[in-house]
Amino acid sequence: MLDKTQRDNVTPFPGNPAAKIAGVSGVAQYGLQPGTTPLLAELAATLQDTLNTCTGHGAAAAAKAALRGYVCDAALLAPVHKQGDNENYKRHLLYASPDGNCTVLALVWLPGQVTPIHGHTAWGAVGVFEGNPFCENYDVSYNDNGAMGLHSKMKMRLQSGDLATVRPGIDDVHRIGNDTQRRAITIHVYGRDLVAEPSSLNIVFGQ
Ligand SMILES: [Fe+2]
Image (cartoon, rainbow, N blue to C red; front, top):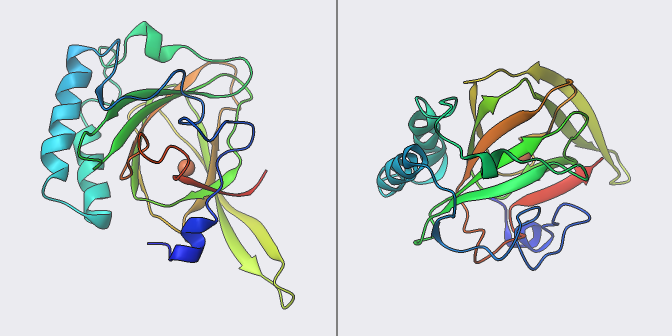
C-alpha cells in the first residue's frame, strides 16, 4: 500500500469535483443503486461474501474470480448503467459495500474517450462487459533531478469477458480508453470506500 505521504498526494481525475465520486451523477449511497438488475444484485452479494474473508491482493484475485460468469452477461446492466457522456467517459456507481470493503462501478467509454495515465491507492479487479477498449501500461522512472518520466511498455486490446487485477502504487500505472468506433463498457471493483472517500482512488501521473 502507499505510505501516508503518497496517500496525501492522491489527486482526483482532473475536471471532476472532489465532493462526489468523479463522473458519478448525484450523491453516492451505500448498497445497491437505482436500476440494479437481479444479476447485479447477485454479483454484489457474491462479492460481499467473498471479500469478507479476503484482504490485499488476495481480495483482488477473489473479486476477479467473482466477476467471471457475470461480467459479460447482457442481463448484468440496466440501460441506465450503459449510458455514456459525450464530455468524458462516464462512471456509474453500481454497488458500495456498507462496510467499506469495496465499490463497484461501470465505466462507459464512447469512441475516443480515455483516462489520464494513473495508478490506484487500492487493489482492483476489472472486466470487460462490452466492446474492445484498450489498456496501456507504463513504467515510471525518475532522473537524477527527480523529474518523472512515463514510458509505455505494453498496450493491450481487450474484449468482452476479459478480466484483470490492479495493484496499488506506482508498479501498476496505466490508462484505459476506447479508440474504436463503438461503445465500450467495463466493470470495476475497487477495495476502497468511495462513498466515504470519493476522491481517494486515483493518482494521476500524466495525460
Ligand atoms: Fe485504473
